[in-house]
Image (cartoon, rainbow, N blue to C red; front, side, top):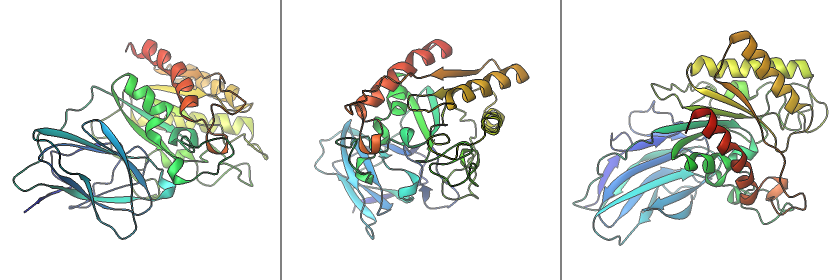
Length: 337
């Protein structure tokens, strides 16, 4: 008889933000949220209620895409494996707007078990951003394709590439269209709900869910916001944006007192976003004497003919590599990694 191992089993490792408030199951919606376990035996299934999102399922470093189906709650993800220990990692490719998911546990082959919990990475990075950070359209064929959930894959973004370079965990707090004061194509210069409202949530689409870091402060937080605020008219007031960006950084600093914070500008930000971000960081640094706060300017090296772009003119994998290549040396220097 195959054995069910519940979602609250201590041998399961969760990476990113999850809602653990239920005694039996775990709920999540942020992209990049990952579940990892070591197991023995030839077979593994997951108990997952979803129906909208897709996942990268990696067994012993071999990765396949799992598309969830409405009404289905059990997915067989490994069969006929060789004897010995195996490692599974399930990573949500798609973002919170696509939907949330409930994970209830694993099913292992009869006579087999989950093994010791996978070791945690020594380093971790949290990324706060918009569609670029979520990998919107990253697997699209060209800039002309329309976004579908299938073209989204956060695990190939500059965020994931940067984290992997440093053998770090990554956590994604990002939504397509998100701004600091004005979300994408908003009719007003200020939107009622912006990044500042989302950064404390365990579940993006649940305003009441609070993320409690509990000793898990990341080593670095990368803020990559401001592209949507100024991407169309009516643009927000420059000073209002600077103040809001300072508030956002202050909120992150309150949550993570010792974490190094990097404020990114570029590669696809219209003026005056880059100078406003620089001003916000400079003002905050001089006010608070915060030495662990930096700006990073990512210059636009993306091929404007379209070779570096996926759906709707969002960077494709080649474009994301170009962004990561500029971010990695800055982190290496400032964090001494």
